[in-house]
Length: 217
Ligand code: CA
Image (tube, rainbow, N blue to C red; front, side, top):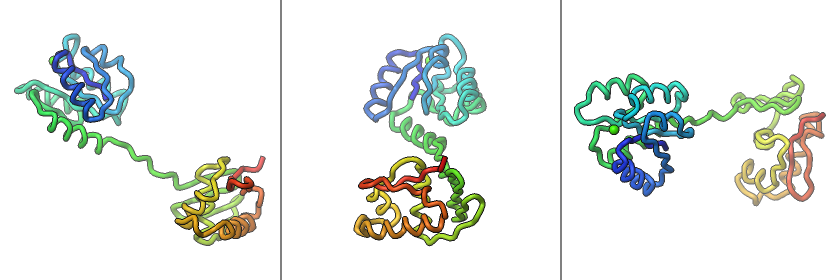
């Protein structure tokens, strides 16, 4: 996180407290330093800075990254700053003096709101193969293929990392939730999957290790 605070004794105390709580802290004492700082996921931004308006810094940081979590820090009574801060892109604010407990609660709340969880891709494409995990449809060169549940899960597990060898143990864990099912079960399913795909070369055996999904050249 980035800590923007021009009062060096306040900044030092805050940095120490934040580090004790496990945060990686980068410090900036001016608006210029704040804008030149490396990318972070959270900014604690004092709005009263010596070389510029914290509100302009806030607006600029928000313009650069819409997903950044920004908590504005204002002095008591500066209602105008607070409103302006929120209007220019801060996610929340704290009023000086604040306790670490309050700050941490707000930081956690803001991070929860701003953290992006990328949705898992529903369509995986490897060469002529197309796997839609939402509708559970599989096509090879546009021709739809009907797979059993286990064959489908096996294919999805391989298609998530095309070109990468997926170990037998991992396939057994992900598809059968156990490594006890044994290698024979896996071989039988790989065999039927290859047969149904009609392109056996799509699923390559890596002897002694596992299997890999490859797009034919
Ligand atoms: Ca200040």
